[in-house]
Length: 128
Image (cartoon, rainbow, N blue to C red):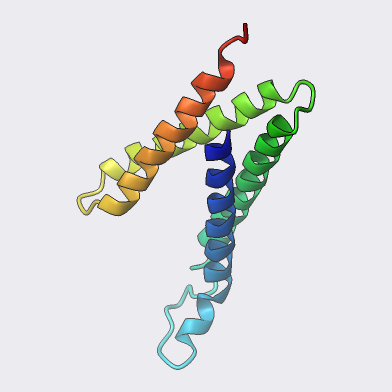
Protein backbone atom coordinates (compact mmCIF):
# COMPACT_ATOMS: atom_id res chain seq x y z
CA UNK A 1 0.00 0.00 0.00
CA UNK A 2 2.97 2.29 0.54
CA UNK A 3 3.86 1.81 -3.14
CA UNK A 4 0.51 3.21 -4.23
CA UNK A 5 0.84 6.14 -1.80
CA UNK A 6 4.26 7.01 -3.24
CA UNK A 7 2.94 6.56 -6.78
CA UNK A 8 -0.03 8.78 -6.01
CA UNK A 9 2.23 11.47 -4.59
CA UNK A 10 4.44 11.36 -7.68
CA UNK A 11 1.36 11.59 -9.94
CA UNK A 12 0.19 14.58 -7.89
CA UNK A 13 3.55 16.35 -8.27
CA UNK A 14 3.71 15.60 -12.01
CA UNK A 15 0.15 16.91 -12.42
CA UNK A 16 1.08 20.22 -10.81
CA UNK A 17 4.02 20.55 -13.19
CA UNK A 18 1.87 19.63 -16.17
CA UNK A 19 -0.80 22.18 -15.25
CA UNK A 20 1.73 24.97 -14.71
CA UNK A 21 3.40 24.09 -18.01
CA UNK A 22 0.07 24.35 -19.80
CA UNK A 23 -0.80 27.66 -18.17
CA UNK A 24 2.55 29.26 -19.00
CA UNK A 25 2.88 27.89 -22.55
CA UNK A 26 1.60 31.01 -24.36
CA UNK A 27 4.10 33.19 -22.46
CA UNK A 28 6.99 31.31 -24.06
CA UNK A 29 6.13 32.90 -27.39
CA UNK A 30 6.23 36.47 -26.05
CA UNK A 31 9.33 37.55 -27.97
CA UNK A 32 8.92 35.38 -31.05
CA UNK A 33 6.34 34.81 -33.72
CA UNK A 34 3.58 32.90 -31.99
CA UNK A 35 1.49 30.29 -33.77
CA UNK A 36 -2.07 31.41 -34.56
CA UNK A 37 -3.59 29.06 -31.98
CA UNK A 38 -1.21 29.91 -29.13
CA UNK A 39 -4.10 30.34 -26.72
CA UNK A 40 -5.27 26.77 -27.31
CA UNK A 41 -1.90 25.01 -27.17
CA UNK A 42 -1.85 24.61 -23.40
CA UNK A 43 -5.49 23.55 -22.99
CA UNK A 44 -4.70 19.84 -23.32
CA UNK A 45 -1.94 20.11 -20.75
CA UNK A 46 -4.15 21.96 -18.31
CA UNK A 47 -7.08 19.54 -18.67
CA UNK A 48 -4.78 16.52 -18.42
CA UNK A 49 -2.95 18.02 -15.47
CA UNK A 50 -6.19 18.66 -13.60
CA UNK A 51 -7.32 15.09 -14.30
CA UNK A 52 -4.03 13.69 -13.03
CA UNK A 53 -4.21 16.00 -10.01
CA UNK A 54 -7.62 14.56 -9.13
CA UNK A 55 -6.34 11.00 -9.68
CA UNK A 56 -3.29 11.65 -7.48
CA UNK A 57 -5.49 12.97 -4.68
CA UNK A 58 -7.73 9.89 -4.95
CA UNK A 59 -4.74 7.52 -4.84
CA UNK A 60 -3.14 9.20 -1.84
CA UNK A 61 -6.50 9.46 -0.08
CA UNK A 62 -7.38 5.80 -0.63
CA UNK A 63 -3.93 4.71 0.50
CA UNK A 64 -4.10 6.87 3.61
CA UNK A 65 -7.59 5.59 4.41
CA UNK A 66 -6.47 1.99 4.09
CA UNK A 67 -3.29 2.52 6.10
CA UNK A 68 -5.21 4.26 8.87
CA UNK A 69 -7.65 1.36 9.10
CA UNK A 70 -10.88 3.09 8.14
CA UNK A 71 -13.76 0.65 7.74
CA UNK A 72 -14.73 -0.26 4.16
CA UNK A 73 -11.73 1.53 2.68
CA UNK A 74 -10.36 -1.60 0.98
CA UNK A 75 -12.90 -1.67 -1.93
CA UNK A 76 -12.26 2.02 -2.57
CA UNK A 77 -8.49 1.44 -2.68
CA UNK A 78 -8.95 -1.58 -4.97
CA UNK A 79 -11.12 0.44 -7.37
CA UNK A 80 -8.73 3.40 -7.49
CA UNK A 81 -5.71 1.11 -8.03
CA UNK A 82 -7.55 -0.76 -10.80
CA UNK A 83 -8.55 2.48 -12.53
CA UNK A 84 -4.97 3.76 -12.33
CA UNK A 85 -3.57 0.51 -13.73
CA UNK A 86 -6.11 0.59 -16.57
CA UNK A 87 -5.27 4.19 -17.42
CA UNK A 88 -1.54 3.44 -17.38
CA UNK A 89 -2.12 0.41 -19.62
CA UNK A 90 -4.17 2.52 -22.04
CA UNK A 91 -1.37 5.09 -22.18
CA UNK A 92 1.18 2.33 -22.72
CA UNK A 93 -0.80 0.89 -25.64
CA UNK A 94 -1.35 4.34 -27.17
CA UNK A 95 2.38 5.07 -27.02
CA UNK A 96 3.20 1.89 -28.91
CA UNK A 97 1.46 3.11 -32.07
CA UNK A 98 3.50 6.22 -33.04
CA UNK A 99 6.62 5.83 -35.10
CA UNK A 100 8.73 7.80 -32.60
CA UNK A 101 8.31 6.06 -29.26
CA UNK A 102 9.44 7.60 -26.01
CA UNK A 103 11.24 4.71 -24.31
CA UNK A 104 11.48 6.43 -20.93
CA UNK A 105 7.75 7.15 -20.84
CA UNK A 106 6.98 3.58 -21.97
CA UNK A 107 9.13 2.23 -19.14
CA UNK A 108 7.47 4.51 -16.58
CA UNK A 109 4.00 3.49 -17.74
CA UNK A 110 5.01 -0.18 -17.66
CA UNK A 111 6.19 0.19 -14.08
CA UNK A 112 2.91 1.95 -13.20
CA UNK A 113 0.88 -0.88 -14.76
CA UNK A 114 2.79 -3.50 -12.79
CA UNK A 115 2.76 -1.54 -9.51
CA UNK A 116 -0.89 -0.52 -9.52
CA UNK A 117 -2.05 -3.79 -11.10
CA UNK A 118 -0.16 -5.73 -8.45
CA UNK A 119 -1.62 -3.54 -5.72
CA UNK A 120 -5.08 -4.23 -7.11
CA UNK A 121 -4.56 -7.98 -7.06
CA UNK A 122 -3.02 -7.97 -3.60
CA UNK A 123 -5.72 -5.74 -2.12
CA UNK A 124 -8.58 -7.58 -3.85
CA UNK A 125 -7.75 -11.00 -2.40
CA UNK A 126 -9.80 -12.04 0.58
CA UNK A 127 -8.32 -11.92 4.05
CA UNK A 128 -8.18 -15.06 6.11
